[in-house]
Image (cartoon, rainbow, N blue to C red; front, side, top):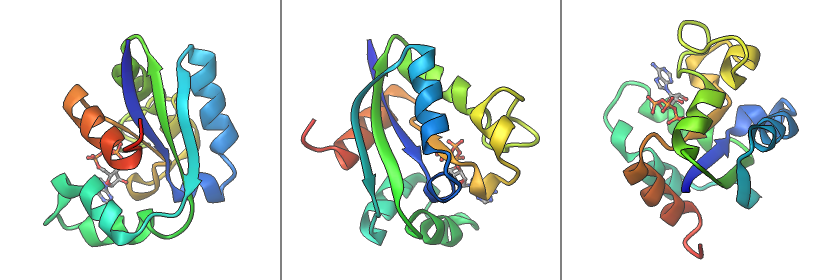
Length: 135
Ligand code: ATP
């Protein structure tokens, strides 16, 4: 079994899609092991998105992710990392995310693509420690 960090980003919370996302996670058979609504400060946002530091969209990304409450969760199950990325769909919700995925069904713009999921075992370990140090 494996764990992954999932975020319903501020666009997902403000659009009332938290239940939709959590429901899809549960129906897939994945299990919630932590779940919290919180508003993140710039410091956590910079650490979370450290790999994007220096990119053109980094400033906008920090602005967006700190703009309002988000939902952070740790999700567990067999191949949980890949399983959630399949549920989410590709980063670009129009060009890459298939219909039937969260982004494919509910998002139009890459910047507002509703959810985050860890992209590797290393990222998952780093992100879970960052968001839920008590776990
Ligand atoms: P996430 O890390 O949120 O799960 P991802 O792994 O699918 O998304 P990344 O390439 O890691 O995609 O990008 C992280 C986030 O940065 C994206 O989810 C999106 O919100 C934002 N982003 C990425 N590329 C762009 C872009 N070209 N323009 C605006 N925002 C972008």
